[in-house]
Length: 258
Image (cartoon, rainbow, N blue to C red; front, side, top):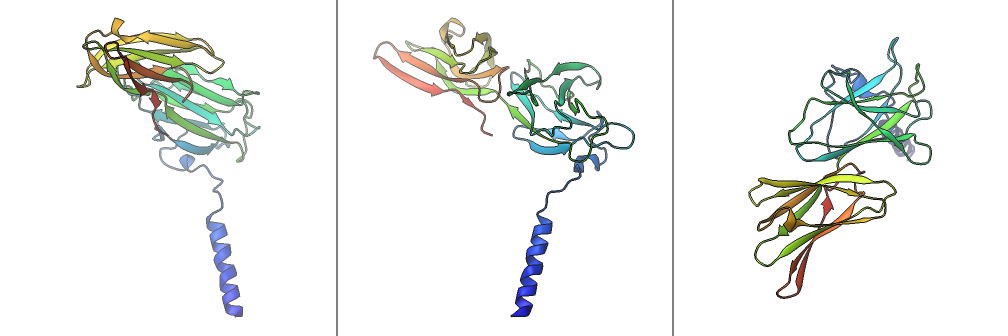
């Protein structure tokens, strides 16, 4: 009986030790590290990682990431759960040269220690831009100078529109947030060819309606919606109307699943 108790205690101790959080930032120990534009640390939709900005040698720590961007898509990088020592963090998107700052994140929440970086990509895929996180306050940051980084593709999908025959489709987009959101509706035919792109802006708490037949008459297909809001900020649907029968067909506008 005594042997069983001792072995059980040892097993619990081993499990506890194995499940303890690792304090070191493992990306700082890999080669190449994530501390320069040479990083191999990559963010994708759904990435959710815990990092630190503990000082390395004589220089403040910086964390660098890569992110592949698809054409006609939109993205958000979120830094949150920020230790007070580094708050507010500095979150930036940089060009391939590692020095040209393309965009700086804005603060969200009551005190702005959470940072959100949001943008729309254009017609070409991009795989050479970089994301950088650094401290906004401490220089000699300690190991508990941690933060959480998450990545989202924020593009919405609308699987169906139909402007052929007597049907017409209306795209309805709601912005329930307190900020203005700008975006673009991209129309695709059944074989995946881009037919047209239509920009839009939705004011806070407002509703936007687009008669799609004015943009893509006499065709059917699907839509994607890119925007500069946060992941899941917008709501909407496409309504295909059949005047001859009075029937309508609703197609939800849905974000990419997390």
